[in-house]
Length: 493
Image 1 (cartoon, rainbow, N blue to C red):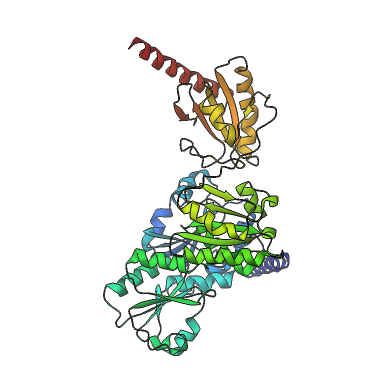
Image 2 (cartoon, rainbow, N blue to C red; image 1 turned 45 degrees about the vertical axis):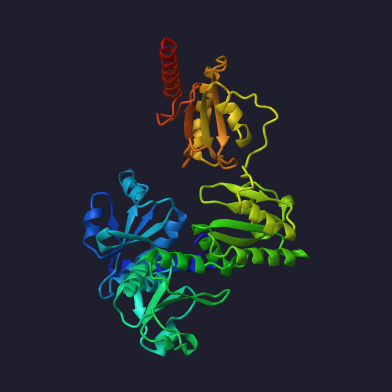
């Protein structure tokens, strides 16, 4: 959605204008997208087995682009049998923010498919133009898995991201578990089922069910699985739908697999190199050998081209001069780095990582040469000394340079810092959370700004008060008094 062609946009705007003029001239003004808010959301959703809800913000450009397509799709789907209802919620409206939080809205527009009166919620992962929305939602509102009764059914169905179950009968635990999987993952894959394996590609009548076959456009092109435990099936689908080595370059056809790689629960091993350089083939070959070796052991592998990986380099805090390099990223955020890589380094280094012999890598800005401003700068490499070992009462802001709320807070913290300038026991500090890793579990930073206070005796508490000089100073003083009182009690004992 973020890369919309300007010419397409122009046609979309023209089409919307023509539609609006036509409606105005004919006197038609009916809106097919239902507007919901906090007052009617639950009641409306509970009455529908299938409803799609867009959470939007009026100022959002992507939402504005989607609006005419969404309305057009709603009009078309209102004629479907049964009708499919599309709705929208202004998530920027203060009264609707609890709804946005409940449905984990983190950006705009966010579309959710709500089934069974809202009991089941899925992400909408389809197109964002009217015809595509209609086609996608027709499939989503139908059965989770389509029966294949003929070779024609199979030929029109089999493609990448398609999964087929072969069964001796459409009943029993295996079939029920397969259908449960299809219901759970239907927004990501298309599912089918058949009684006859001859309807699979190349008429493979030798395949006997029950078996699940996943089709893919890479590696071995399809893979079979016979464990019908639902969790095992889901793990099989998630792991098998990612290439053995995902390629990250500027080819758009690879991007869906890159997104799936980063969204997977696997530990991520990423090799970044200039893939146009001579001699890179030995790196690629050795990396693939290692991927084969650790297949099924909870590690995913990605090969990233230097030209396409600038955002990743910024995120991980590494430099182009360090390539070729490997980064391993664990689900808890821990990172492990091997820069200046040679082909023969790959296997032994990954082996050392698996055996716990590689220390974590912590991204840190350089330690400031001068740190003379009232609000002191903390980086990952100085966090321990300046906060945990300083013996001071430290108010620490975790911020992002682009954050508007952080920019508003900055002069207020400056005033607080000036207030305590002559107090050696108080330190007001800030840490750029986008440029430094936060490895200490005491700091739960999920948004910006996040402010914590660590007292001189080691107690840590989040600051959640008003962002005024007076309130922040009052918070610091109350925590200092509490610490002094606790120390006095210890002395008496």
